Image: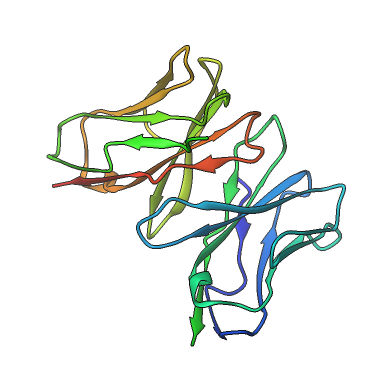
Length: 112
Length: 112
């Protein structure tokens, strides 16, 4: 089946810098995407979502960008903090038809 | 509002045994999905229930089964446990299928 992938398995950033985590998805029919954060020993935490009729959505310190032309999704974290250290997953689905398909994840390490 | 609750948090079983895991979704959510998370395979979809009906099923053997009750609580069962079933089992709930899906803390199953 089709799956979601990530370009970078690990990312190290300095505290206070901005982080960008990328994701490539393969199903052009997917119309809904979610970013999750997973800390050690915990379940994935919902961060932000975006529907395919949008190309950008902002939350608190986070922005998700969607480029449907190249099937690319990114998560931008502003002013990265030590508490942002975690594994980040993107997930895609076709609403109402398919389950969420997850990428392998990117580990974000914040250097104080 | 209480989040997704999974019980138990940790479980150790012997090969050949069976196990039942429980998930209580967020109040008002009728969709419950189950995922298996392992270091090698990442997050893999098991099945999804909506209003007591299984709507989607992943590529897992028949030893993996589930059900959903009228109060939306869900259980999954794994029979004839194998060492490879050791994983973090995650449950996600949403009001509609897979939109704004929120995860529980997971059940860590170890098969010895």
